[in-house]
Length: 139
Image (cartoon, rainbow, N blue to C red; front, side, top):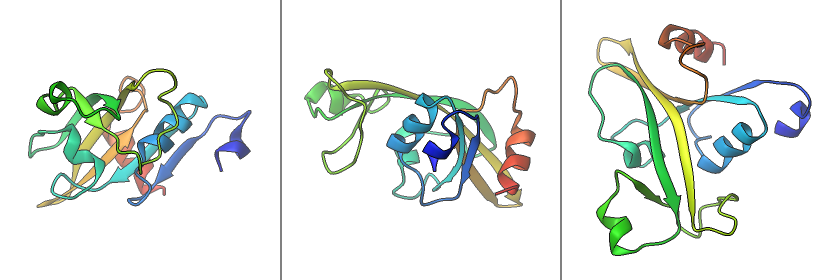
């Protein structure tokens, strides 16, 4: 689908099940934007490797250095590094075993005790948390 928008700009909105750092980078590097609902902090999704997080609403930048290496230094610093196993597709390591990944994580309340988690590369100066909520509802 990304190739259909080769010369046009788009915001790709997706539900859970489409959370893939490889896809996020592919969209970002194409000059487009993404807004994807991801699994919560208690699940096995990619979010748990970016914590810890507040239990309230938040809007934060998350950063990790992605790597396929598993040295003691990397294992000792999960707040800096995220291990990417060989069986997980990631096309952007190139000549180095490290890749800087950064994204925006938004957590907002949808009911009294339920929250949604959105990973996006939409600029916080252009899209507020309310804009993210509205955009996600359009899916």
